[in-house]
Image (cartoon, rainbow, N blue to C red; front, side, top):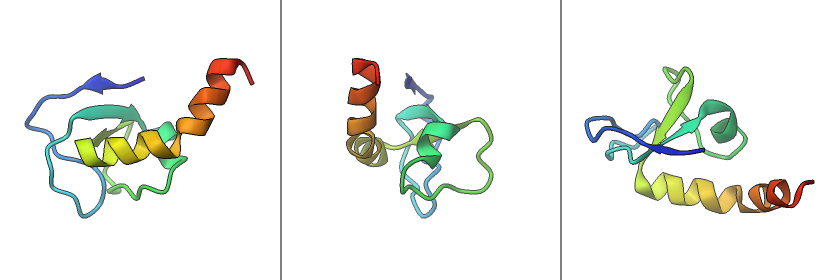
Length: 69
């Protein structure tokens, strides 16, 4: 689901300039409340803070997916 990214990359959330820690598929991130920059194509790079928020927002969905629903 997520993978490490190079430290030279910045977070793709609009208004954030922190270094990206994770790369998530664009489809998964668009299902959340995060507003991304328009130049994202296939994946979104998230900093530690925004990745933590992404995990909190998708916790229920990931649990249901794990259970097979």
